[in-house]
Amino acid sequence: MHMDLDTFFVSVERKINPKLIGMPVLVGGTGDRGVVASCSYEARAFGIHSAMPMKTARLLCPQAVVVRGDHEAYSKHSNEITDIIKESVPVYEKTSIDEFYIDLTGMDRFFGCYKLATELRQKIIKESGLPISFALSANKTVSKIGTDQAKPNGQIQIPFGDEKIFLAPLSVKKIPMVGDKTYHILRGMGIEKIKTVQEMPIELMQQVLGENGISIWKKANGIDTSPVEPYNERKSLSTECTFDKDTIDNDFLIRNLISMTEKLCYQLRSEEKLTACVTVKIRYSDFNTYSTQARIAYTALDSTLIEKVKELFNKLYQKRMLVRLIGVRFSHLIQGTYQFDLFDDKTEQIQLYEAMDKMRKRFGTDAVLRAAGVGVKQRDFNPFNGIKK
Image 1 (cartoon, one colour):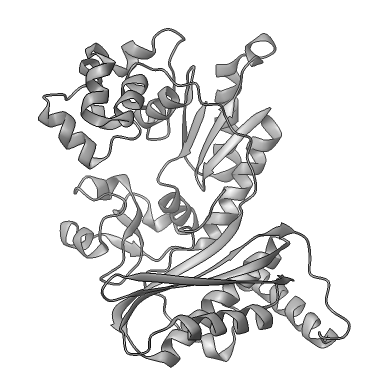
Image 2 (image 1 turned 30 degrees about the vertical axis):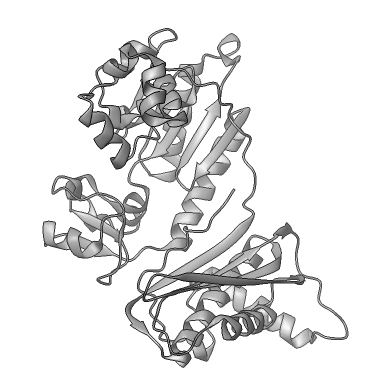
């Protein structure tokens, strides 16, 4: 079973603000360099799609409502849905913030896979208020393609043995792994439908596309033996910020780093995690990208991590070059709450963090900020870039 929340970011925004229902909505960075993270079906009618530059999307649909993404709200709703799935099925794999694979092998004997899948979808819709689609089939590939066919807010079952029949009339672009470049190569060969790939010798696909050709041929024929991998906690937290204009303003860069680090620290503590490795990333105006990292004692304290981030940035930054993007990543995460050092940490400092976190939990992540981070506008903030399983 493959489940996918329909236009997830847009759906959450519409739940928060029902006035957006029925309107063309774009979620993403609001600056000229921002990109579309998600768009409503009304916006897609104008040719807009995810990852499109926001500037282009606005030209295609001037009347679209642009909403800056809310990482906290999306994570909250994703976690709620993950909890529902976790309680309802034997094995699941969360592949992104809004996408799941579920292994229902053997459930027909006790309940009925399609019935279970239907009731799970209805439960998610009822408890979350968000639309979700699913497809049920023999393997991951066919189910993922099936979910796309079931959208918006629908469900479908592909009976065992009918995989090739189901896939045959669809465009080859529906096959996972077929991006724009591969699609143009296949179209250049006169291949438009999956049926044509099914009828081709696998050796020819390998000759044209190498090992990827073999994988595409197998997927086109509904062959996929990859298992559902049980969901694991993320191994890192990261965020990046692309600026509207390239800059050499050192104070501005530092303030952005402090703001980004402070929010990541709060996320660490919210999930009861500690980090032992800090990475700082810089991309200059010529698109050359550099990063440096350092191991530290496990912590989740702003003061410790902000100082380490600033130290790494100062080592990495070439002050005469314009900066396009900066990023911060925490890795080597472990589960646990911070035990402060009786000799180095002040009790008042720990109590201050606890009080600040309570305020943020109640009023939002921007309720309490360091003075250095106040007023910072991260134009192309994408907190989901670095989420890794």
